[in-house]
Length: 341
Image 1 (cartoon, rainbow, N blue to C red):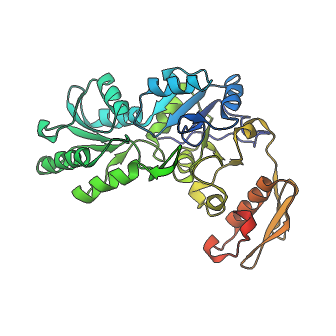
Image 2: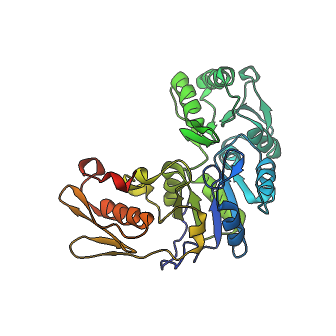
Image 3: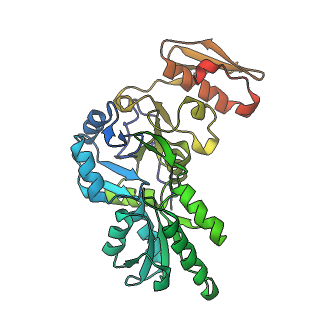
């Protein structure tokens, strides 16, 4: 995939310069069935000026089901506004297997519907000699489905193998009761049995970003996510500006420790920040990083808070920039607990 071009100048707000917004769902728009505070009104306001798409690794539901849920929360969403990892998986599948073939499904309606749309025949049995395996998350996936995937992959090994496509490999998924195991754990179970790794369609791989950019005709989209290892890493790989919103999986501690490939362009407490001027970051010759009234510098192996400022988020932004610019890995630094508590 050719990286999408970043705007040349930093915008006054995260939205400035974007020709589309791509919002993750779990941990960004909702947690379980309920909308997160300020998410709906902020996204409705964004949609007044640019297209807003909803991009999700969760393969358990169809685009129509997701759109209906978002509409019930108060957003104006049609199925074509939802980009799912099964849709991205179809891009990979079409490159390897012609329509009309049978494909073994591990997962729910999200995969089955997309396979049928693309002209494939879904099956749940390895005895049907499927031409490929597509695996995604669904709450009812258990040993039987995982075993069928392993059997299908093993049976095809003697004839050169068949494509095994995972919609995503998220290790966890946020739900109403907390953080639960995600599709990555289920993919790992099959990998343990068959000894090979799948192709991956969803974040942090680029097929889902290509699908979204093509869908909305965007050359400079803005990705909003709650996970560094999927949303932000994927956006960086695709050359897309990114926002990490601290309403889902990753919080201050993970921001401070982010590796270069997982660092977001913006860190927001909630989606209201999309429409607010983003504070500038300045760095003095002595290494002091200032954001708003907060200031942080690295003194040897100590992260020193010069000024707390009046906004804990600005303090986090300053500390993360100082740590990121340091030649010392975070595990070698003394970090004040108040920066991540």
